[in-house]
Image (cartoon, rainbow, N blue to C red; front, side, top):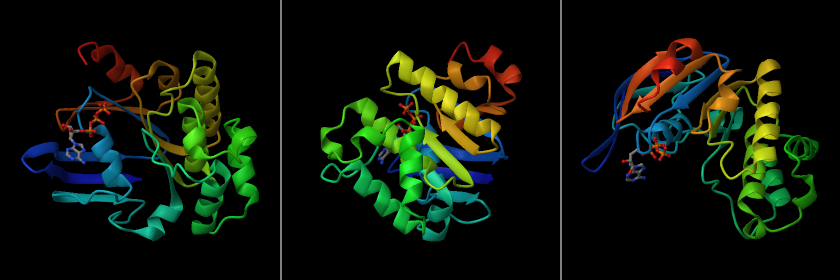
Length: 220
Ligand SMILES: Nc1ncnc2c1ncn2[C@@H]1O[C@H](COP(=O)(O)OP(=O)(O)OP(=O)(O)O)[C@@H](O)[C@H]1O
């Protein structure tokens, strides 16, 4: 699904990702690692918001940089969610549905999935952090994309919400949704993850099945 070859991203003198070679297959891949390690930078390169400084990245066989055709095929939830404050959640999801060539009914389905239907008419700027997260998750799964990338899907949710959303992600995984998930709250997600990748200081430092990787992450 995703191939990175010598993928490097610099911000001025800072090397956020340093010659990363990584192959992400179908299924669920969990990306872990310390703050500032380069995880979100990797996600931003995957969705074409950043352009590599060196090396290359291919997502579903395409170069993601400024690639609207690819953006229509994938779903993404950022952290913090980057959503327009003066629009309602419903307006934003309908705008995205139109961009992706989807029917409006998909908006209701995605909102229902994350229990966000009750506030689709309210302005995003009025949402609590948890409500914002649910709309952002609905955005990611809108129209059942081939690949969904999630940055901290469990952040800002209360304990009940964490359990609920982890359960939904598990069901979607079992139905065959391909996901790349960055999460500091990894315990509820690891049981249904196929692979775990640890990125620290701009490099992939561990990679394998959960059984191979999790026992070795104490120091992260
Ligand atoms: N747009 C940017 N401009 C300048 N520096 C950036 C930018 N985005 C990220 N960085 C830097 O790149 C490094 C990696 O950041 P990144 O957000 O990818 O880490 P992360 O692993 O997602 O961290 P966290 O777990 O805290 O979310 C950090 O040193 C960060 O300050």
